[in-house]
Image (cartoon, rainbow, N blue to C red; front, side, top):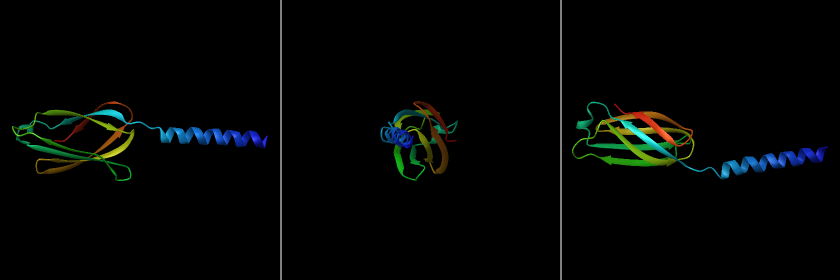
Length: 110
C-alpha cells in the first residue's frame, strides 16, 4: 500500500513540474483605448511587469501626427497577472492585466 502512495506522489510531482516547465506564452492583443483627446498624444510607453515585479514587456509607441483613439498591439505573455505602467503624454497610469488565454485585452488609458 505504501508503495502505491509513493508512485502516486511521484506521478503527481512529475505532472506538476511538467506543467510549470512547459508553460508557453500566448498572443495577447492589447487594445489601448486613448479616448477623445488621443490626437494630442504623441507617444505612449508601456511597461508590463509580472507578479514578482519583473519586466515582461516594454513598449514604446510614437505618433508624430497624434494617436488614434484606439491602438492595438500584439505581445506574447505567459498566462498570469500583470501590472501595466503607462505613460500617455505627460500622464502616468497603472492598470491591472490578468491574462488567461490568447485574445484581446482592452486597456483604458484615458
